[in-house]
Length: 300
Image 1: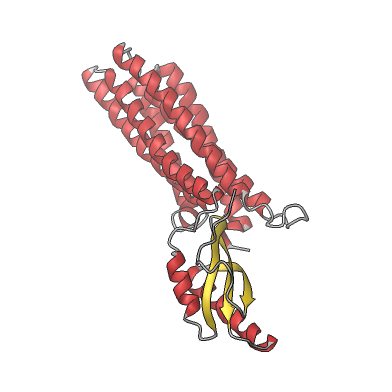
Image 2: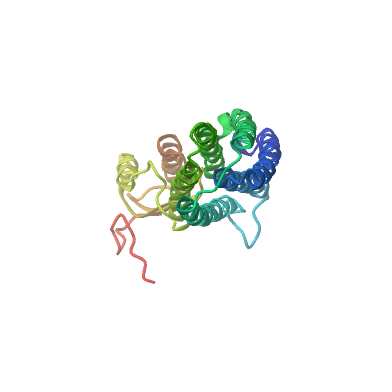
Protein backbone atom coordinates (compact mmCIF):
# COMPACT_ATOMS: atom_id res chain seq x y z
CA UNK A 1 0.00 0.00 0.00
CA UNK A 2 1.34 3.47 -0.87
CA UNK A 3 2.11 5.99 1.81
CA UNK A 4 -0.74 8.23 0.70
CA UNK A 5 -3.22 5.45 1.65
CA UNK A 6 -2.06 5.04 5.24
CA UNK A 7 -4.38 5.64 8.23
CA UNK A 8 -2.12 8.59 9.15
CA UNK A 9 -3.06 10.37 5.95
CA UNK A 10 -6.75 9.65 6.49
CA UNK A 11 -6.54 10.99 10.03
CA UNK A 12 -4.88 14.18 8.77
CA UNK A 13 -7.64 14.56 6.21
CA UNK A 14 -10.36 14.04 8.83
CA UNK A 15 -8.89 16.75 11.03
CA UNK A 16 -8.51 19.09 8.06
CA UNK A 17 -12.13 18.50 7.00
CA UNK A 18 -13.46 19.33 10.47
CA UNK A 19 -11.41 22.52 10.75
CA UNK A 20 -12.31 23.68 7.24
CA UNK A 21 -16.02 22.97 7.72
CA UNK A 22 -16.12 25.02 10.93
CA UNK A 23 -14.56 27.99 9.14
CA UNK A 24 -16.93 27.51 6.21
CA UNK A 25 -19.87 27.93 8.58
CA UNK A 26 -18.24 30.92 10.31
CA UNK A 27 -17.51 32.69 6.99
CA UNK A 28 -20.98 32.01 5.62
CA UNK A 29 -22.67 33.42 8.73
CA UNK A 30 -20.17 36.28 8.94
CA UNK A 31 -20.63 37.11 5.26
CA UNK A 32 -24.39 37.39 5.71
CA UNK A 33 -24.12 39.46 8.89
CA UNK A 34 -21.41 41.74 7.46
CA UNK A 35 -23.09 41.97 4.02
CA UNK A 36 -19.76 40.96 2.43
CA UNK A 37 -19.82 39.14 -0.89
CA UNK A 38 -16.04 38.66 -0.63
CA UNK A 39 -16.47 36.77 2.64
CA UNK A 40 -19.31 34.71 1.14
CA UNK A 41 -17.11 34.01 -1.88
CA UNK A 42 -14.35 32.84 0.42
CA UNK A 43 -16.94 30.63 2.14
CA UNK A 44 -17.79 29.19 -1.29
CA UNK A 45 -14.09 28.56 -1.83
CA UNK A 46 -14.02 26.89 1.58
CA UNK A 47 -16.93 24.71 0.48
CA UNK A 48 -14.79 23.62 -2.46
CA UNK A 49 -12.02 22.80 0.00
CA UNK A 50 -14.37 20.74 2.18
CA UNK A 51 -15.63 18.88 -0.89
CA UNK A 52 -12.10 18.26 -2.17
CA UNK A 53 -10.86 17.04 1.20
CA UNK A 54 -13.95 14.85 1.71
CA UNK A 55 -13.59 13.31 -1.74
CA UNK A 56 -9.91 12.67 -1.06
CA UNK A 57 -10.81 10.92 2.18
CA UNK A 58 -13.53 8.90 0.47
CA UNK A 59 -11.26 7.99 -2.45
CA UNK A 60 -8.48 6.81 -0.12
CA UNK A 61 -10.99 4.74 1.83
CA UNK A 62 -12.62 3.04 -1.14
CA UNK A 63 -9.35 2.60 -3.07
CA UNK A 64 -8.22 0.20 -0.35
CA UNK A 65 -11.02 -2.22 -1.23
CA UNK A 66 -9.83 -5.36 -3.04
CA UNK A 67 -10.48 -6.11 -6.70
CA UNK A 68 -13.63 -8.02 -7.60
CA UNK A 69 -14.71 -10.20 -10.51
CA UNK A 70 -16.47 -7.20 -12.05
CA UNK A 71 -13.94 -4.54 -10.94
CA UNK A 72 -10.66 -6.23 -11.84
CA UNK A 73 -8.68 -3.01 -11.36
CA UNK A 74 -10.28 -2.41 -7.98
CA UNK A 75 -11.70 1.00 -7.08
CA UNK A 76 -8.68 3.21 -7.68
CA UNK A 77 -10.51 5.21 -10.36
CA UNK A 78 -12.84 6.63 -7.68
CA UNK A 79 -10.04 9.11 -6.97
CA UNK A 80 -10.28 10.42 -10.53
CA UNK A 81 -14.07 10.63 -10.57
CA UNK A 82 -13.95 12.55 -7.29
CA UNK A 83 -11.39 14.98 -8.69
CA UNK A 84 -13.47 15.52 -11.85
CA UNK A 85 -16.63 16.26 -9.84
CA UNK A 86 -14.68 18.64 -7.65
CA UNK A 87 -13.42 20.56 -10.69
CA UNK A 88 -16.95 20.86 -12.13
CA UNK A 89 -18.25 22.13 -8.79
CA UNK A 90 -15.53 24.76 -8.61
CA UNK A 91 -16.43 26.09 -12.07
CA UNK A 92 -20.13 26.33 -11.08
CA UNK A 93 -19.31 28.23 -7.89
CA UNK A 94 -17.01 30.59 -9.79
CA UNK A 95 -19.81 31.37 -12.25
CA UNK A 96 -22.17 32.26 -9.40
CA UNK A 97 -19.57 34.46 -7.72
CA UNK A 98 -18.86 36.31 -11.00
CA UNK A 99 -22.56 37.01 -11.46
CA UNK A 100 -22.96 38.31 -7.91
CA UNK A 101 -19.73 40.36 -8.16
CA UNK A 102 -20.98 42.18 -11.27
CA UNK A 103 -24.25 43.02 -9.51
CA UNK A 104 -22.42 44.20 -6.39
CA UNK A 105 -19.91 46.28 -8.40
CA UNK A 106 -22.71 48.11 -10.19
CA UNK A 107 -24.57 48.70 -6.94
CA UNK A 108 -22.06 48.74 -4.05
CA UNK A 109 -23.50 48.31 -0.57
CA UNK A 110 -22.00 49.03 2.83
CA UNK A 111 -19.93 46.26 4.39
CA UNK A 112 -19.15 45.70 8.08
CA UNK A 113 -15.38 45.69 7.63
CA UNK A 114 -14.55 44.89 11.27
CA UNK A 115 -16.57 41.66 11.16
CA UNK A 116 -14.97 40.71 7.86
CA UNK A 117 -11.46 41.19 9.29
CA UNK A 118 -12.18 39.08 12.36
CA UNK A 119 -13.77 36.18 10.44
CA UNK A 120 -11.21 36.26 7.61
CA UNK A 121 -8.33 36.26 10.11
CA UNK A 122 -9.75 33.19 11.84
CA UNK A 123 -10.12 31.57 8.41
CA UNK A 124 -6.54 32.43 7.52
CA UNK A 125 -5.15 30.88 10.69
CA UNK A 126 -7.24 27.76 10.15
CA UNK A 127 -6.05 27.42 6.56
CA UNK A 128 -2.45 27.69 7.70
CA UNK A 129 -3.08 24.90 10.22
CA UNK A 130 -4.67 22.72 7.52
CA UNK A 131 -1.73 23.37 5.17
CA UNK A 132 0.64 22.25 7.88
CA UNK A 133 -1.23 18.96 8.27
CA UNK A 134 -1.41 18.36 4.52
CA UNK A 135 1.99 19.59 3.32
CA UNK A 136 3.81 16.23 3.28
CA UNK A 137 0.84 14.41 1.73
CA UNK A 138 -0.17 17.09 -0.74
CA UNK A 139 2.70 19.16 -2.07
CA UNK A 140 4.93 16.15 -2.75
CA UNK A 141 2.18 13.62 -3.45
CA UNK A 142 1.53 11.79 -6.72
CA UNK A 143 -2.13 11.45 -5.67
CA UNK A 144 -4.24 13.82 -7.77
CA UNK A 145 -6.83 14.26 -5.04
CA UNK A 146 -4.30 14.96 -2.30
CA UNK A 147 -2.41 17.42 -4.47
CA UNK A 148 -5.69 19.06 -5.54
CA UNK A 149 -6.85 19.35 -1.93
CA UNK A 150 -3.52 20.88 -0.88
CA UNK A 151 -3.61 23.54 -3.59
CA UNK A 152 -7.30 24.21 -2.86
CA UNK A 153 -6.42 25.11 0.71
CA UNK A 154 -3.39 27.12 -0.41
CA UNK A 155 -5.60 29.11 -2.76
CA UNK A 156 -8.09 29.73 0.02
CA UNK A 157 -5.27 30.92 2.27
CA UNK A 158 -4.31 33.53 -0.32
CA UNK A 159 -7.99 34.45 -0.71
CA UNK A 160 -8.28 35.03 3.05
CA UNK A 161 -5.28 37.36 2.91
CA UNK A 162 -6.93 39.26 0.07
CA UNK A 163 -10.21 39.55 1.96
CA UNK A 164 -8.42 40.97 5.02
CA UNK A 165 -6.54 43.54 2.93
CA UNK A 166 -9.76 44.48 1.14
CA UNK A 167 -11.61 44.92 4.43
CA UNK A 168 -8.87 47.22 5.72
CA UNK A 169 -9.12 49.29 2.51
CA UNK A 170 -12.93 49.53 2.84
CA UNK A 171 -12.67 50.53 6.48
CA UNK A 172 -10.12 53.24 5.64
CA UNK A 173 -11.68 54.61 2.43
CA UNK A 174 -15.33 53.55 2.39
CA UNK A 175 -14.87 52.27 -1.18
CA UNK A 176 -17.16 49.23 -0.97
CA UNK A 177 -16.68 48.24 -4.61
CA UNK A 178 -13.49 46.55 -3.37
CA UNK A 179 -15.73 43.79 -2.02
CA UNK A 180 -16.95 42.95 -5.53
CA UNK A 181 -13.44 43.15 -7.00
CA UNK A 182 -12.13 40.73 -4.38
CA UNK A 183 -15.01 38.36 -5.08
CA UNK A 184 -14.19 38.32 -8.79
CA UNK A 185 -10.52 37.66 -7.97
CA UNK A 186 -11.50 34.69 -5.80
CA UNK A 187 -13.67 33.38 -8.66
CA UNK A 188 -10.64 33.55 -10.97
CA UNK A 189 -8.69 31.61 -8.34
CA UNK A 190 -11.42 28.96 -8.30
CA UNK A 191 -11.34 28.59 -12.08
CA UNK A 192 -7.53 28.41 -12.09
CA UNK A 193 -7.67 25.56 -9.59
CA UNK A 194 -10.47 23.80 -11.45
CA UNK A 195 -8.67 23.99 -14.79
CA UNK A 196 -5.71 21.83 -13.80
CA UNK A 197 -7.87 19.36 -11.86
CA UNK A 198 -10.29 18.91 -14.78
CA UNK A 199 -7.46 18.63 -17.32
CA UNK A 200 -5.62 15.98 -15.32
CA UNK A 201 -8.73 13.95 -14.47
CA UNK A 202 -10.08 13.99 -18.05
CA UNK A 203 -6.64 12.96 -19.35
CA UNK A 204 -6.65 9.93 -17.06
CA UNK A 205 -10.29 9.05 -17.85
CA UNK A 206 -9.38 9.11 -21.56
CA UNK A 207 -6.57 6.61 -20.83
CA UNK A 208 -3.92 9.18 -21.72
CA UNK A 209 -0.23 8.44 -21.36
CA UNK A 210 0.86 9.51 -17.84
CA UNK A 211 2.51 12.91 -17.68
CA UNK A 212 6.29 12.72 -17.78
CA UNK A 213 6.30 9.47 -19.78
CA UNK A 214 7.09 9.36 -23.49
CA UNK A 215 5.94 6.43 -25.62
CA UNK A 216 9.03 6.88 -27.79
CA UNK A 217 11.35 6.74 -24.75
CA UNK A 218 9.64 3.60 -23.45
CA UNK A 219 10.02 1.96 -26.86
CA UNK A 220 13.72 2.91 -26.98
CA UNK A 221 14.32 1.58 -23.47
CA UNK A 222 12.70 -1.78 -24.20
CA UNK A 223 14.33 -2.30 -27.61
CA UNK A 224 17.69 -1.65 -25.93
CA UNK A 225 17.28 -5.11 -24.39
CA UNK A 226 19.35 -7.41 -26.68
CA UNK A 227 16.68 -10.10 -26.95
CA UNK A 228 13.98 -7.70 -28.18
CA UNK A 229 13.92 -6.88 -31.88
CA UNK A 230 10.81 -4.70 -31.91
CA UNK A 231 8.07 -3.27 -29.72
CA UNK A 232 4.62 -2.59 -31.17
CA UNK A 233 0.96 -2.17 -30.15
CA UNK A 234 2.22 -0.24 -27.14
CA UNK A 235 -0.36 1.12 -24.70
CA UNK A 236 0.47 3.13 -21.57
CA UNK A 237 -2.19 4.51 -19.26
CA UNK A 238 -3.00 5.46 -15.67
CA UNK A 239 -5.29 3.39 -13.48
CA UNK A 240 -5.27 6.32 -11.08
CA UNK A 241 -2.92 9.25 -10.61
CA UNK A 242 -0.07 7.17 -9.16
CA UNK A 243 -0.55 3.68 -10.64
CA UNK A 244 0.61 3.26 -14.24
CA UNK A 245 -0.01 0.30 -16.54
CA UNK A 246 1.38 -0.92 -19.88
CA UNK A 247 0.63 -3.51 -22.50
CA UNK A 248 2.73 -4.29 -25.58
CA UNK A 249 3.78 -6.86 -28.15
CA UNK A 250 7.48 -7.73 -28.14
CA UNK A 251 9.13 -9.36 -31.16
CA UNK A 252 11.95 -11.65 -30.06
CA UNK A 253 14.07 -14.40 -31.58
CA UNK A 254 13.02 -18.01 -30.99
CA UNK A 255 13.84 -18.66 -27.35
CA UNK A 256 13.09 -21.14 -24.60
CA UNK A 257 10.59 -20.42 -21.85
CA UNK A 258 13.42 -19.90 -19.33
CA UNK A 259 15.04 -17.28 -21.56
CA UNK A 260 11.73 -15.50 -22.08
CA UNK A 261 11.18 -15.31 -18.31
CA UNK A 262 14.52 -13.54 -17.84
CA UNK A 263 13.65 -11.08 -20.65
CA UNK A 264 10.28 -10.39 -19.02
CA UNK A 265 11.98 -9.78 -15.69
CA UNK A 266 14.32 -7.25 -17.29
CA UNK A 267 11.40 -5.51 -19.01
CA UNK A 268 9.48 -5.20 -15.73
CA UNK A 269 12.54 -3.91 -13.90
CA UNK A 270 13.28 -1.24 -16.52
CA UNK A 271 9.63 -0.12 -16.64
CA UNK A 272 9.47 0.21 -12.85
CA UNK A 273 12.85 1.90 -12.44
CA UNK A 274 12.75 4.28 -15.42
CA UNK A 275 9.03 5.09 -15.74
CA UNK A 276 7.31 4.02 -12.47
CA UNK A 277 5.15 1.58 -14.47
CA UNK A 278 4.30 -1.21 -12.03
CA UNK A 279 1.63 -3.13 -13.98
CA UNK A 280 2.59 -4.50 -17.38
CA UNK A 281 1.36 -7.15 -19.82
CA UNK A 282 3.76 -8.17 -22.59
CA UNK A 283 2.90 -10.54 -25.44
CA UNK A 284 6.02 -12.17 -26.92
CA UNK A 285 6.11 -13.00 -30.63
CA UNK A 286 8.74 -14.79 -32.72
CA UNK A 287 7.33 -13.68 -36.08
CA UNK A 288 6.56 -10.12 -37.18
CA UNK A 289 3.00 -9.10 -36.41
CA UNK A 290 0.72 -7.93 -39.22
CA UNK A 291 0.35 -4.64 -37.39
CA UNK A 292 3.94 -3.64 -36.71
CA UNK A 293 3.46 -0.03 -35.66
CA UNK A 294 4.42 1.18 -32.19
CA UNK A 295 0.90 2.48 -31.67
CA UNK A 296 -2.20 0.43 -32.44
CA UNK A 297 -5.09 2.02 -34.32
CA UNK A 298 -8.36 0.81 -32.79
CA UNK A 299 -11.54 1.07 -34.84
CA UNK A 300 -14.56 2.46 -32.98
